[in-house]
Image 1 (cartoon, helix red, strand yellow):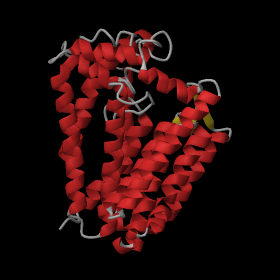
Image 2 (cartoon, rainbow, N blue to C red):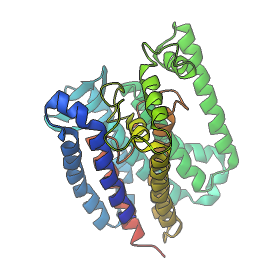
Image 3 (cartoon, rainbow, N blue to C red):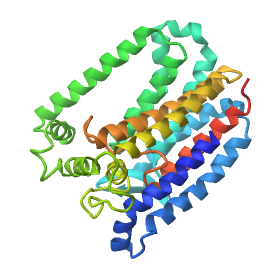
Image 4 (spheres, one colour):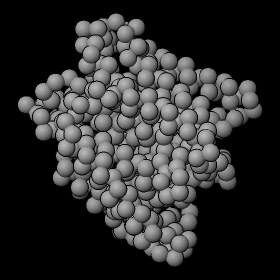
Length: 359
């Protein structure tokens, strides 16, 4: 697991520099601007990673409730004077250079709390759908708060998905999974109906852009179309690292949400498949750690981390390829983002500690 993580991080530095060098040079006068900040964030993230690697993961059970409640409190801090607005939405908290997204904290809080509740109730209790939803409550509360306070639907979807995956892996009754699918469909219908009633609101417009990006190419569909141009022009083997044309100011957020489109343009379909296989290897190692853990709470913690990474990778690639409506989700360990890196490294530290106690 450690070897795969190191390889992904080093590969991410190369891909991030290639995608960001032009914007960094023209906007900040230094082509290494984004890469330097990413390396610094990694250095900061090594502290929680090292701490979580040393601390016995079983101790987290004693702090699961406090960690979860603390993560919810950070969401309310967005409404305080230390809340920071970015791109028209208040989703950050910080003082000076110390800034973070509460959504990232809630993801870890939900993983810890769900694992704690599942390990206490046992697999036999999961045959009761009502108990399954009681265990799912932390994910529901966390996701709803994220949507209601920060308007961050993408992070809420990840939080909902993390809780659902952990409960299903633990052995929940199939009725629980089917009911989640039904509720998800109902939620989507409500968004569509509400958007239509309110005169094509923000969420509704994103769905319309997804269905017909060419028609909205001058507005909401611009990012989608430019990303697809980048993917298509890459062909089978790409134009070569550093040779992307779409990164020259055409693809918005080329260093963040849309970095996969630049990767496809420069390395082609072959490079995209290799990157996906590397992520699959990382997820497989987390799965192996989960299956060989000595007791349930560690297995579920590893499964929650695996679910978090899997959902984020799948949704990011799906958004970039216009498989699903556009929503802001970064590609783990590849996209530029200090908060995401720091908290992901903390999760990797927990996984590495769990692997020390394998059978």
